[in-house]
Amino acid sequence: MEEYRELAELYCTSCNYCLPCPENIPIARILSLFSLARVYDLEEAAKKLYAEIGRTGFFARMNNGAACTSCGECAEKCPQKLEIPEELAAAHAALADDDEGG
Image (tube, rainbow, N blue to C red; front, side, top):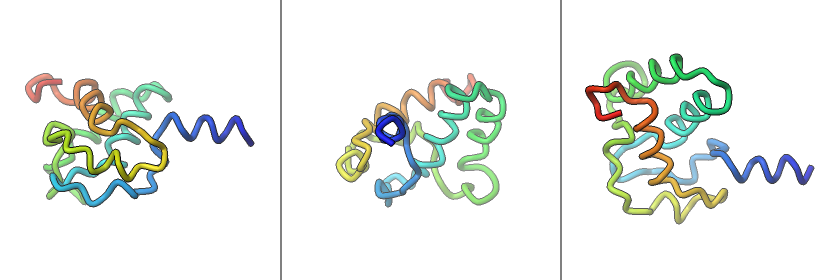
């Protein structure tokens, strides 16, 4: 059980306690896509889904990680104590199309 607890502290559990984001960023969605890429080696699928944020589907009216202003409101509420602004920046760098600065 302790091993699972330690693993949970490394990644977003999609609890959404970090929301609402003042920049309308779907934080849990982005961090789960980042995990798909770096943990499960599904980078192409994660990039495709990340590209849909702000463009189509359920996340059409939301912003991707580039919109993060590092205000820190999300990190203050995170029970996993994740450095969410830094994670969003890393996720954007890894998942955005080259023409989006990734």
